[in-house]
Length: 291
Image 1 (cartoon, rainbow, N blue to C red):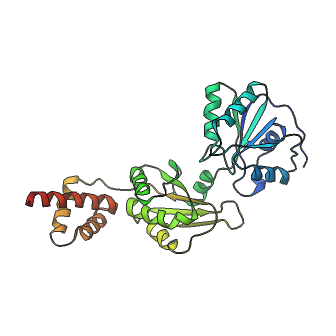
Image 2 (image 1 turned 90 degrees about the vertical axis):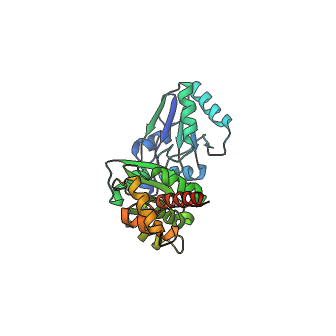
Image 3 (image 1 turned 180 degrees about the vertical axis):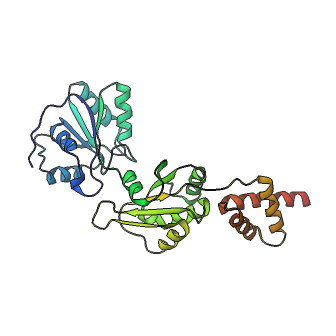
């Protein structure tokens, strides 16, 4: 299908593009890409390929790059073009702009500059994964990418532990095994979860199970492709802190701090990491009293 350029009002147009299958793009997105005066992309090669697949000519336009390493001057030039009466279309490398995407800074600059902003919506890996995972969708929290370092990653998971909604993460295939191991330690091994891989593509795959089961599955060779991890909300009963400490002291009288924490965490259905930290504090307190 060939597209002819039609005038667009001056403004910033965010364009949702496919996360895999090229045919998932909307007609409005194609019209916007065909008609915008200025084209901007997180990955210029990806957008040019998408336009070529759908028969959208570049004409005298070129695709400008806007990514994490672009300077502030790039955004300022784009805003200046809009103020001159031009239409600017920005596309992420895949999916919806601004979702784990450098387009956020351009959006913020556009709002501050009071230029018109609109969106031609399209596919989203977050929403697609929620549909396929089989976990509750009445409430969810998108946490993006977790930190690379183990300590920082565990800290981020700890802050999300009591979120009353399905947790959604993007993850690198190389870090997937480590992330799932940390998630089972912090969030609890019995939480239901799902790993969605290569959504909408030829080798799309969804694996469901507990965090412990999935951590075991991905403990070996890293998978290939784009990954979305979803974790069910916690269903933890209220445990009185005094009762928790009493049980820990009893267990620590006959076993190591680590073993006592494991035992009490399983008994109360609590994440092992939190119980272990409480046990360490109790052990230190007992040592100080002895001294």
